[in-house]
Length: 109
Image (cartoon, rainbow, N blue to C red; front, side, top):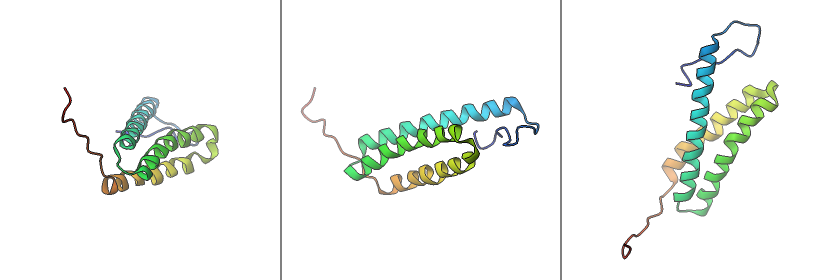
C-alpha cells in the first residue's frame, strides 16, 4: 500500500491530498516495523554468526536512516534511497544465503 499512496511533495507549497499522505505514512511505518521484526527474527534463527550480526545491523540501520530523513531533511531522498538499496537488498541475500538453525525437541516434555 505504501507504494500506491503518494506522500506530500518536497515543495510544501504544492497541493496534495492530506489523507493520502497520512495513509502513506501509516503504511510506511507498518512496513518499517514489520521489516525490523523480520531482521530481528532472522538474527535469532540464522545459523552463522556473521549472518546474525548482519541481520541485527540491518535492524539497527533501518530506524537510523529513517531518523536521518527527519533530522537532515534536505537529504531525505538520499536517506530513503539508501534504505531501499541497503535494506531491501538484504532481504534477497538473506533468503538465498541464510540457513536456519535446527533445534531438537527430543527428550523434553
